[in-house]
Image (cartoon, rainbow, N blue to C red; front, side):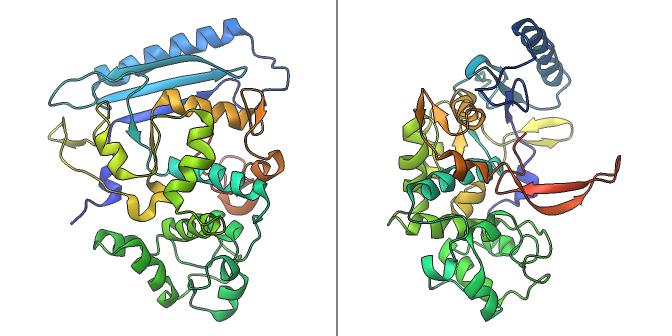
Length: 327
């Protein structure tokens, strides 16, 4: 039986930072190069401390500033057994950061014009159904990517743990009683988002894995990035999943996330992720070329639904389309 995802998250991690954190590449930054250099030095000290204190087996970090990757480095090991070091090209399984990557893929598909964020799944994937026939008719890609589908949180995850296929799980969502009324509440669903991504790719006659490769990874030169587990396994330079056992990191479990690839199946290096971050900060441009339509990508940056309230100032926290793990 595959390992539960909540356990697997205790693993070697990758980190990608944008500096400055909230500014587009075309806008003039109030942050200076000297400030970034100082911040990177402090970040490096923090990373080294995390390794020394056994917080994680290893970390990889990249920093993007003014449309350039100004820093990329690995710390610690990718496998505690072999002691092989992590570097900026070490490939990590991205877990739910895959949602942010995947929403960029969908934005590219939206920009091509065959679909919109509000395209109905009933038109794109007529075989898919929800419990309520009215919701089946009305639900859109945006609804799935904003986690406002009415599915209860983590619907389908246990079926994945029981080794059901993606097709079987998506089919069985029609038997899942709603956890709320449609579009009224946020509920995190890996397989709701998976259906949104799969349906978007179907409009172009593509499987999700091929769409990700053709519409994003290849265009950015992300040669170490994939949405297939087999590609991750084949990488010679990859970080393996670890868990703490009696205070020691142990390389014990493997996680094949192909079933929910749009929501959790991407793998990449920080050198590759820096390219994706540059695209984000440049509103869809990369290397002077518009790779992803600016308006389509903007939907992934704008609030879509309230997912809670900040306990410090009581203001609403919002979920962006597939971007809850970004920045």
